[in-house]
Every structure is written in structure tokens, then in C-alpha cells.
Length: 488
Image (cartoon, rainbow, N blue to C red):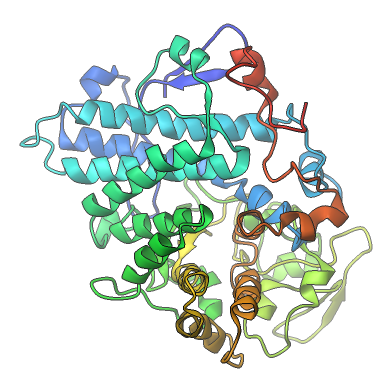
């Protein structure tokens, strides 16, 4: 990766392609020699490597997605304050100089620039040589759209860069309104990607984007901008042929990492793999309390993190009959050995609640095989139910909602008003998707963030994070690049 910096502080452009691993099933070896981008983009394999590099670039960013999607919300908190950044995210006191924000901004623009580079080069490529040209275009568009979708939800207005720019171009690029980013990049790219990507990926290609992944993210984008008719239409297509998505019968199998993570409910993950020199994920260690008996039982080596805890108010919402409860939340300061039944009591100096969703044997700290589930079929069904309900089809919305309830072992709903259905769907999302990076974004898009989070410090302007101070200084022009309201 060739990094270009200006003479102030910040990485602005990434001009060459990352050639590294992304998926557990499509890992590629990086070349031993360097090459200019003109030499690099010639063959079908060149473009495949370039696309895989763009997937790989997302891995660094999604290691921190829990801070934006979960910790910022009301279902998770930091109980043992040992990491200032996470504590500040939790308490709505993070400031624009925090490295989490500058790294996040840079990570996404690395992905965006890689995709822009691919799209620029492939437009001139000979389709007779680059036989998978349409697919690579679709993958680059999908990844660029995903990056922009995350960015506008985190930061609000961002620089909309869709061509390979110079440093001077970036320095002059204004923050583009969120609505324009949706219409001109996110929606447009995902529509085209859905048409170009394959229905399924098999063999060594498993883990790459499919048309179903593009439609699932597109449905979420429509839902976020409250385009409920298009959300309903898009999400409905994923529930019927030619798509074959289905809920796993056992919810806990979603988080059994001895089994294949690419199953009937899988749509798109950020892929991680243990034992390959830093390509593993950090959450198995990062979410565990410092309890020796627990760590030893699950063979989790190399340390703990105590980065996230289910709030007691969230724990108390769960019904005891809910089959999702035990793997989703554990409380309160005790652990029962599943084999012997022996009880371990936690020290008061450690976290008292935790999630089991990322628990798996780990040989080296922060090197877990657990993927990050960007979107899975249960999410699609709940979004489909939401779109139906908002389109005044509340009775029809009960079918996808009740399919989630049935798997959880809970009674089904019937006869709900639109308002009751709206609240029930939102609550079901909390349970079904807890600690998978969704809660905060759900609160913001439904206008409920301040209601639920004001007690822990949220102000009305905090539906977005501050943009990085480094970017404000680099652009140094408040007329085109000002700080988000309230953070000055």
C-alpha cells in the first residue's frame, strides 16, 4: 500500500492497491515485489487481487464497529473504566481529537480510494481479458457504498469523492450533504452492484459480496432515509426465489465458531481468521471479564478486555423463556461451569455482565476466528417487517416478525396496532441483534436516540460524532469543511 500524505498531518490518499487477505476462504498472498498501478491493472487476476485488497481494508475499521454501533447506545456500557476512548464514547464525551475518529475517517477513505482506483482502471480494461469485469465493478461499488453508508451514519456530511483525486482535489472537497451522498453514491452503487454481483459465492469465493448482500444493505439504506416503499420492495425480494436465505433453527449456532459461519442465514460478514499473523478479530478477548475460571474453561489465551457490558436495564428486559438470552447476556457477577456446575463469583474489580456471542477458543490474544456479522437474514426479516408496518401493512408485518419470535421460543404477535407493532419490532431488534453493531444506528434512524440516551449524557446534536480535528485542520476552510454542530 502506497500512502500519500500532505505536509500537515493526515493521510489523504491511498494510490495503490492493498494486496492481502480478506476472507477465510479467499485468502491471497501479497506479491513479493512492488508495482506501479499502471502495471498492476492488466489481467483478470490483477483486478481480483485489487478487489480483495479493498475487502481487507475494511478489517481494521470493523474491529471498532462495536464502539459506534453498540457502546454508543443504551444496551451496553463500560463498567471497568480502563480505556479512555471507550469510556468517552459510552458517556458522550468523546472529542474531535480522539484517534478513534481520525482512524475511522482514514480507514473508510482507504476503502473508498481503493474502490475509486479499481473503477477508474477497470473502465478502460478489455472485457476479453478481464472476464469478470462486471463482477469486479459490482464488488467495488458495493464496498464503496458500504463505506459511505457507515460514514454518513457516524459523521453526517462527508466528502463525496468518487474519482481518483489529487491531494489538491481532496483539500478543496467540501462536506457533501448526507442526502446527496445517499442518492449519488450509496443508492446508485448498490443498485448497480445488485445487478452485477453473483447470486451466490461458492468454494474459494465464499465471503465475497453477492447480489443478496447488495440488496440487504440497500434495503437498510432505504429504511434509514425513510423510503419505506423502496425498502419493502427491496427486502421482499430477499425472502423469495431465487434467493434461498433461511433462519438457522438454533439461534446459538450463529455463534458456534466450530461450525461454518457461511450458512443459510449468512449474507455478508467482515472476514477474520486466526493464526495468520494478525488477521484475527479482537472481540473474544475484548469483551470478556477478567475471570480466570471462565477464560480457562473456554481456552481464551492472551488476556481479556472488559470493553463492553450489557446494561442491567437491558438484561432485565429479557424473558427467561427467550432462547437467545444466555448467549446474548450474562449477569450478574457469577459464572456457572457448564460441565461441573461449580459457581465462580467475580471480583468487584472486574465487569459483572458480558455477552457470550464471541466466545471461542483463542490461542493468541486478539486473534479470534469470529467474524463480524454486517448483515444476516434475521436483520432483513425485521427490516422487512418494519417497512411493511410503516407502509400500513401491519398484519402482513407479523409474518416476518413472528418468524424471529418463533425461533426464540416466544409467543407470536397478532392484532397489534401500527404503533404497537412499531415498538414490538424495535424491541425484537434489540434482542435479536444485540452486540452486533445495530442498536445505536437503530435509535438514530427512528428518532429515539435522545429519549433513551439522554440519561447517560447525550445532547440533541450528538446523533453524529465529531469529525476528526485533524481533518478540520488539514482542510482549514470552515466554508467547505466545518465541525459538526455542537462540537466546536
